[in-house]
Amino acid sequence: MCTTCQMKPDPDQLDACGEKYVQMLNQSAAVLMISIGYRTGLFETMRYLPPSPPDKIAQAAGLDERYVREWLGALTVAGVVTCDDSGAHYQLDPNWSPLMTDQPGAETLAHLAQYVPMLALVEDRIIDCFRDGGGVPYSAYLRFHELMEQDSGQTVVAALEEHILPLVPEIIPSLKKGIRVLDVGCGRGRALHTLAATYPKSSFVGYDIGAEAIDYAMDRARETGLKNVTFEARDLTDFHETAPENEFDFVTAFDAVHDQARPDHLLAGIRRALRPDGVFLMQDIGASSNVAENRNHPLGTLLYSLSCMHCMTVSLAQGGLGVGAMWGEAQAREFLAKAGFAPVERHTCEHDIQNYYYVARPGETSD
Image (cartoon, one colour):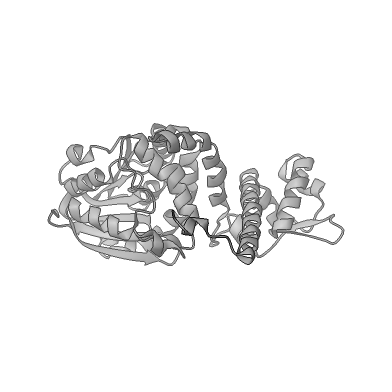
């Protein structure tokens, strides 16, 4: 019999674990309140208000006072909102304000809180998968592409010119002259809209499995008069066989490869679609393929949870590999090599603590 399994817990450590668990419960509740504050505009409203009573805050935000008052209580205890000793007047803590509101130049993080309630909606289906295997399809995730668009606006779109494109030294001059660009897993196409507007001599194509996201991207392109960008709803599982040959000078994938049904097929298709002197830029989760090396990862718990409840399961729902968000650098490099990319450079960007940026060029296919 396993003696380790019969070991009694240390009373002090047991108390410490209990305290930590209570902290987890409080922090989880605060995240839900932050999501509500971001979606209802409460943070944005309070950003401009002096210390105010709940009814004035509710009136300014156009919301029901009773709900606003209870929300203020939760986030006051969490330390995001401050109140006077009488508990009558409330203000968004100025140190929290840049994280909770969409201020120019600020690293807004409040939008990330929305992932938690979104994932909670599929909890029952994920539990079924724990028991029976399989996965949960993209269609089950309400507002997924909306959230990804907000996330992309922070980590990709706002950083394209200053941080991301310069990772490929020759690409900005090439875009100015005119090249052909593909973005796989483009979602609502926010990055491509920006690139197409900035570089009118280049042409851009976006693929995504989500038909609603593609419709949104096409509508947005029409509204803004962009003639040099097109979008197509496309399942990329067989991209290794269906990709056009030698058509693109530059291919991008922003936080999209790991949750594909077959990342190996996608990467092989990208290699096929690239011209011999082309380049592939892949943004993907920055982590190790060894769980033990991720124990101190600043976003590790969140990212493994997102993987379990979204990235991995949507791949498995398509009969895919289910590599998950935390597939890590070693596995990413292995897949890139097998697809025929060499050399591969891995970069980090100061603005993005979550992702690595791989710059890969066509080479020989690895055995």
